[in-house]
Image (cartoon, rainbow, N blue to C red; front, side, top):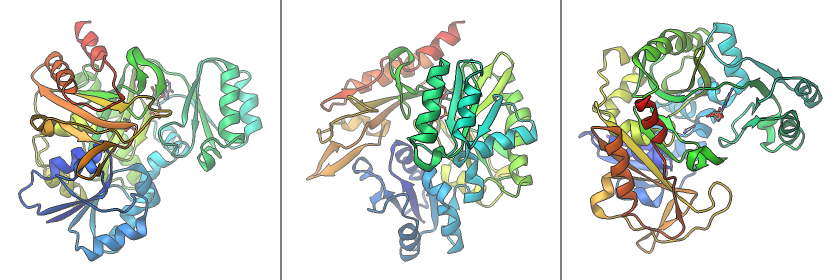
Length: 422
Ligand code: AMP
Ligand code: GLY
């Protein structure tokens, strides 16, 4: 079987490595992939958002199955375009990907179907939004409606900050058209949990839970990033919380999407906050999370391609999806200065013994050398029986990987360890 994976980061590398375990797979193409995955996939220089070229490539190369991993191509309708040409895909169609593509849509969906989330107001007029923040409680959370490279959420601690956020999103168009509409919502507190799930639109199978570390600096300081590390499972996600999420959030969401004529098939990511009032949805993503995927998929014991195809064929109910009863920790090694400004082009050395533990995101091959080529360069994942051991192993591995200007957080997993001690 010939497989094509659209995307080029650590998440895609984790997906590719897992798919490779299937004996029927003869070749995997990564569009565009990155130099660090050259041993695992054939790199094809087509951007993940160039839908026309992606479809053309799939037809010409007789691709049997396509995985569309990133948010942009999903929201742009990449799966619809491939399916129109008869290519089977993993990923939601455009009309379902809107659950991530529009925060206004997802908030209205949750309100309509009684799915627990933060209270909110929607604004399309900047002056009305400015008037609202004059008297709204603070802190408050301002969200651009559309995709904004994970940066469209501003937590304003004062009314002044809230006003600045409204002006920069709606008037100065910091995120372009994504800021034509905004959501202003209640500030919630509590531990955050990421739950990625497989769903074929009828049943939903949550994967092992995980915890992201979004801020750039130790102890959750500094700017928000795409994610600096993850652990799985997330100890805050107890059996009782999981049951409540299934009943009040996961199943109602799948049913709501179906009822709206927007059946969701693929990986639906629930970003949750466990508040004193129960679990609430912070965000939906229409795809695997990154770096969550780099701890979740290595713990998957079932064959990923089989599960993905069951999603496509709507036979997920008959599919066994098993995770190892172990702990995983992923530490992201970034370029110093990420997420703002950083240098590229430094040689990366990875000992051969660690190749199975590394998922490469921002790297390019030049004259046979692997060079840094992005903010998040790679993720290092170790699996052990305990969380403590997984964290220790990951940091030991990080110590053996070298490139100039490497930066990483030193406290990935500490919050999860503290929870276990509570
Ligand atoms: P998002 O891009 O929606 O994941 O938001 C980024 C981060 O902002 C989340 O991971 C939360 O830490 C935080 N956040 C988003 N919405 C809220 C909220 N209503 N209350 C508190 N924190 C929030
Ligand atoms: N790690 C958060 C995300 O993938 O959106």
